[in-house]
Structures are given as C-alpha cells and as structure tokens.
Image 1: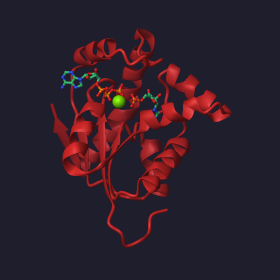
Image 2: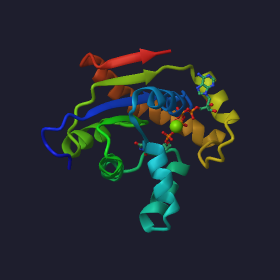
Image 3: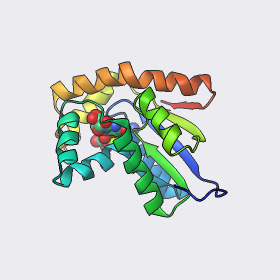
Length: 171
Ligand SMILES: Nc1ncnc2c1ncn2[C@@H]1O[C@H](COP(=O)(O)OP(=O)(O)OP(=O)(O)O)[C@@H](O)[C@H]1O
Ligand SMILES: O=c1ccn([C@@H]2O[C@H](COP(=O)(O)O)[C@@H](O)[C@H]2O)c(=O)[nH]1
Ligand SMILES: [Mg+2]
C-alpha cells in the first residue's frame, strides 16, 4: 500500500454513461498534473489478457453489470502505485455503495471531493451512439442496462457524498 505520511490526493469523477467523464478528465490532467485512472479502461485492459478473470469481466461489461468490488479496487491500487504520482482522478468509480466500502477498506484515501458530471439522459445516449470507439457495450440494449445501474446503484453513492458535503456538481 501507500507509504504512510505521504499526502495523496484523490478526486472521484462520477457521471452517467457517456456524460463526458473521460473527456473532462483528460482536460483536467493536462492542466493540473493528476494521473487519470478510468475504472472502465482498467477493466478493458484486463479483458485483453486472455484469462478466466478477463472473460468474466468481458461478459459482465457486455451486460452492463458491475464487476466485483474487490477486482476493481485491486486494479485501481495497482495502477496508483505503478504511476508514482500522488494526485489521482479516478473516473467512473465508485459505481455502488459496495465499491465505496471496498475502497475505504483497502485503499483508505478519503477523496478530496467528488465531481459529478450532470447531463441529461437524452444527451448521454446521443453521445454514446455517436462516439464510434468500437466499445462492445455501446449498443442500445447494454446502454439501457447501464442507465438502470447508474440510477439504482450509483445514485446512492452520489447521495452519500452530497450528505458529506463533498459533492461538486457540474452541468
Ligand atoms: N461537453 C461535451 N459536449 C459534446 N460532446 C461531448 C462533451 N463531452 C464529451 N463529449 C463526447 O461524448 C462522448 C462520450 O464522452 P466520454 O467518453 O468522455 O464519456 P464517459 O462519461 O467517459 O462515458 P463512459 O461512461 O461510457 O465511459 C465522446 O464522443 C465525447 O467526445
Ligand atoms: O468501477 C467500475 C467501472 C466500470 N465497470 C464496468 O465497466 C463498464 C464501462 O465503464 P465506463 O466507466 O463506462 O467506461 C461499466 O458498464 C461496468 O460494466 C465496473 O463494473 N466497475
Ligand atoms: Mg469513459
């Protein structure tokens, strides 16, 4: 884990599917020296490795479901340590309360604040269908499932940080 005594800054960037998390993170990184870690990108990398775990992740992502918390938290920790940086923008995580609890137990670095990218569902859908990145989950059926997961599982996390006064909403 991280050497104790070293101040590590973490900002979570949350928003619905296609809201522009990756796009805004790239801009912030180029101005403020953060390391951008997209949880979804880390999982897509893992899928490329032809392992049993990779196949399981691929199937869950294809269905728009969330992968087990322990897997994504371990991937995040590994990437944070490998970067050598002390400032992180974590994009697309935590997706549910269980993710948040696993992060608090394993990584333990309280986020400075949580950036919520607020965007209408209509606009998010339009953006996803126009981005042409060849993502296996950018089809109407999976998109519908991803929106449901956002509503049911991610909104409670957003409410948690709102209660703590840590939420910063951008439109
Ligand atoms: N402010 C904006 N105005 C118009 N288009 C945008 C804006 N922000 C992002 N986009 C476009 O919308 C698409 C989705 O953006 P992006 O990939 O950053 O979203 P995301 O939140 O990371 O999505 P996902 O959750 O699926 O990873 C991209 O094609 C991007 O270029
Ligand atoms: O913490 C996470 C982040 C992502 N997933 C899975 O990946 C896809 C795509 O994520 P994007 O952030 O949109 O790139 C998401 O639908 C989940 O299936 C996850 O399980 N946990
Ligand atoms: Mg993204």
